Amino acid sequence: MTLASPRRVSSIAFAIGGLASFFIFASLLLLTHPIGSSVSGYFYGTETTQHVEFHHSSDDIGTSDSNPSLDSSSDSPPLTRDREDPNESTDARLGEETKSGRSTNISMDEEEATQDSVETECDLYHGNWFYDPMGPSYTNNSCPLLTQMQNCQGNGRPDKGYENWRWKPSQCDLPRFDAKKFLELMKGKTLAFIGDSVARNQMESMMCLLWQVETPVNRGNRKMQRWYFRSSSVMIARMWSSWLVHQFNEPFGFAPQGVTKLKLDQPDERIIEALPKFDVVVLSSGHWFAKQSVYILNDEIVGGQLWWPDKSKQENVNNVEAFGISVETILKAIAKHPNYKGLTILRTWSPDHYEGGAWNTGGSCTGKVEPLSPGKLVKNGFTEIMHEKQATGFQRAVADDKLGNRSKKLKLMDITEAFGYRHDGHPGPYRSPDPKKITKRGPDGQPPPQDCLHWCMPGPVDTWNEMVLEIIRRDMEGGRS
Ligand SMILES: *[C@@H]1O[C@H](CO)[C@@H](O)[C@H](O)[C@H]1NC(C)=O
Ligand SMILES: *[C@@H]1O[C@H](CO)[C@@H](O)[C@H](O)[C@H]1NC(C)=O
Ligand SMILES: *[C@@H]1O[C@H](CO)[C@@H](O)[C@H](O)[C@H]1NC(C)=O
Ligand SMILES: *[C@@H]1O[C@H](CO)[C@@H](O)[C@H](O)[C@H]1NC(C)=O
Image (cartoon, rainbow, N blue to C red):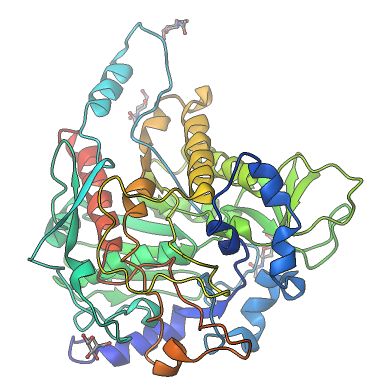
């Protein structure tokens, strides 16, 4: 592939694995409303169902993939699912942290001493955004692997300054992404992104960054997108997994066929099966916990999101709790895997920026052309609680005694706060090259839906891969920052 024909390549990529189906993403509605003291009541609340039509999403994952009427031509809510996944029962996500917080034992063995030195490394996740006139290292024209929805410039976004802001941790510098260095460090290894459409967003950013130094070979298949860099034998892979835990549709207990069921205490078996092929895994998930599903723990139905047949039955686990449990489950399963010794990076909750409504009720991030100033972060209750549950799930996994020193291979890439400032980094109305989609109002007079969840490319999402490179470098070079 040459860079001269990016449109063609990107349309192939689109056809193979790109965005295909779009789903109702109910809780974006919630995201726009600050959450008061009664968080769990809020999430259980029938409030959500009053605003959003959910009848068609009763089996959203199952049917959407196979239902051609729900393809990219529909008015797309921000969460997308790939067509490439042949098995509906799959989802994945990851997470991790730089500190183990594991032991209060003061008798330091060698392991803990090492841990200590890790903890004294510069914290990458507190700092500020600064304007870098040098700009991004690729453009929409020099990256052939770019989902059209994230091609903000190609979709007519008029401003460009948002591409130039870089992240500066308080105590050190986060180097610009050095593609040669990455390929060198990863020589002979495979890095996999596992998760939902936001994980795809990050994977494509990584591909765009690497593409600038070498054109990779497509080694993908129906199950997994894979790109191979010959010079260094590096493989970049991507697996779809919306929840990262075991998912199925068959009837279970009082939950009928068609409603998605999640076994919160069982990892997505596809991830477990694929792990031996990977050396570094970047996991992320979360947003799908706003969608309809039934939660199962110890083979019992313990709760449901946007589904509960009978008010007389008690719900013990809401979607926020379920998210935390799922994070713990997948991380422990990965750390205990007998044939995976790699590094596992959990990228935390990616904040959205809908104002004045949800994606389907006129919510907008139009006109945001630069990051929020320091201290001007607007609290978002849903983001905060999801991030908290995710971090807790991570900590519980790391604290598991049975993991021993393997917990050191779990890292939390804690981007949530930093990216809370980047309300300027989303496609907003510029989700499609078709200008009608930007301006045409719906039959109800609503403006067209915006995407204030995913990230423009180039754009702030590239920072995630600078962080991934730094985490890998520290792991491989023994930690000094
Ligand atoms: C899909 O997953 C289900 C449940 O894990 C499994 O029974 C089935 O065989 C899988 N199908 C394919 C095509 O992999
Ligand atoms: C501290 O660690 C030592 C050796 O690893 C172990 O024998 C001891 O029980 C631990 N003490 C506590 C309080 O965990
Ligand atoms: C990239 O963006 C420019 C506008 O900045 C646009 O003219 C061009 O068509 C876009 N290219 C692609 C491949 O989308
Ligand atoms: C953990 O300990 C085992 C056995 O002592 C050792 O072989 C392995 O390299 C250690 N792993 C890490 C990540 O330190």
